[in-house]
Length: 58
Image (cartoon, rainbow, N blue to C red; front, side, top):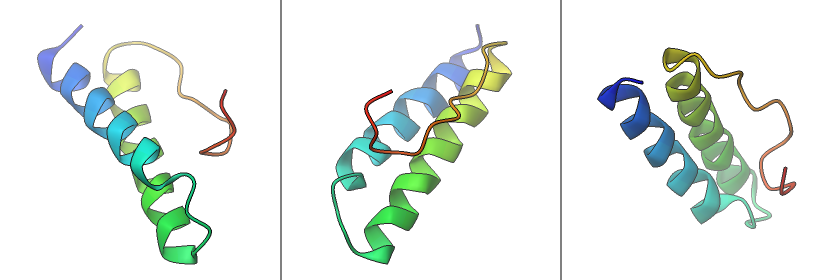
């Protein structure tokens, strides 16, 4: 596992958590950006990406 991959995964997780409960399109967009960053880190570390919609708890 790379340090960069772990950092991206952690930063993406935090960004998704911050914005997932917002109902505005801007909040949902930022939550998706967080999920994308999270997945980028997961893929770099050889893990499968998360495929559920941000904020679903899965």
